[in-house]
Length: 263
Image (cartoon, rainbow, N blue to C red; front, side, top):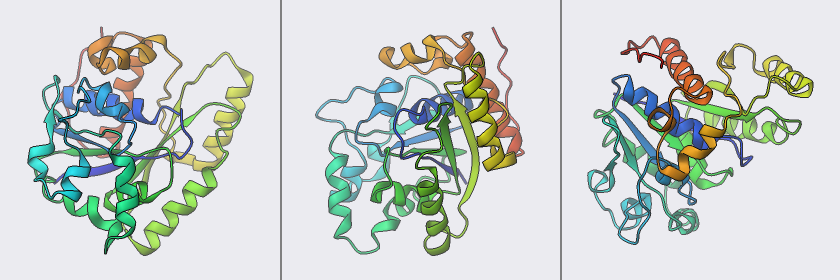
C-alpha cells in the first residue's frame, strides 16, 4: 500500500514542484515504484518529467468529469518505476466544478485508492494556493512535505497553511501528519539566510529535514530539458542534495532501498 505525500505551500516559487519530481525520481532510481499526481494547472511537474502537454493528454479532469479509468490516465515516464497523472490548464476549471459536487473534498482520495496497491509512494504536487484541489490532496494524504525557500519572507503565510492542515486533520483526515519541512534555495554565504534557517528550525524542530537544497543552476536548467536532476546531472550539488534528501526520507520511514553510487 502506497504512502501518499502531498507537497504543499501556497507561496509560489519555493521549489515545491522541483522537490516533488526530484524526490520521486530518486526514489524510483532506488528501486521504489512511484506515482506523481500533478494537480497544479500549470503542469510544471508534468513537463518536468518529460511529458508533453498536448491536446490529447488526459488529466485528473478526465477522471472526475468523464469517469475515465485512472489506469488510462496514468503515463509512464522515461525513468523506470516513475509514473505520472499529468496536469494541464484544464485543471483550473476543475476547482470550480468541484464546488458543486457532493463530498467534494474526497475525490482525490477515492481516485488514489484504486491504484494505491500498485505503488510504494504517491506524491501529490499541489497548486500554490489553499483552494479545493489542495484540500483534496491533503485529505487524501498520509502526510505533507512543506518546501520553504530560505529567504526573508519564508514564514509569511505559513500560519495560514498550518491552520489549513490543522482544520483538515480535525474535520477531514485525522491521520494527516507533517512528514517534514525542506529548506530550499539555500545559500550558506548569506547571514540572513542562516537567520531564516534558524527561525524555521525553531518553529518546526525535528520536522525539518537535515538535508537542505542549495541554489544550483543545474537544478534550474533540468526542467527545460524535461528531465529530473537524477537524469540531467546527478553529480551536481543539487543532484547530490536530492539524493541525500531521498535517502533521509526513506530512512525516516524505515524503508530499505538500493543505494545509488555518487558520481
